[in-house]
Image 1 (tube, rainbow, N blue to C red):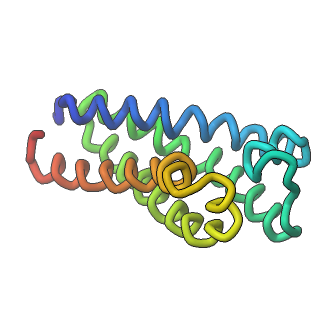
Image 2 (image 1 turned 60 degrees about the vertical axis):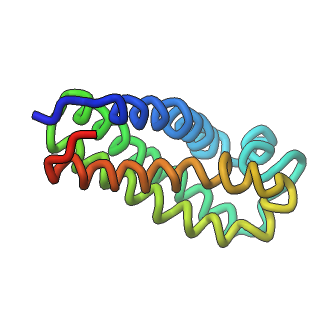
Length: 151
């Protein structure tokens, strides 16, 4: 049994409040109301429209993938680590890896469009950064915990 530590709880709360809840909201909006102005305002920017069909399809597909794969892994992994179970850390690491992977891609692919509208601080923290930083922290923490290190 891997008893939760303070760091475990910090990562769980950070993941729930700053990753899971906002992503659940925007991805549900994208899946349920993909062409609504509210969805576009949140995902693209106030008053903006999809750049092209590929931009829309990528966003729509990512929303489904997040809702079906990534967010359930995040929740199940978080429950598992709170329960002190090794399987929870495995699911958590999978969620963290997905988070790092897709958000680094978005970090670079969306820079031309999103960065000018929000500036460096928001771009590298709120838009993509939180998911990258959380993912790296969760994967590293999982490796340490499964290796027997208690932090």
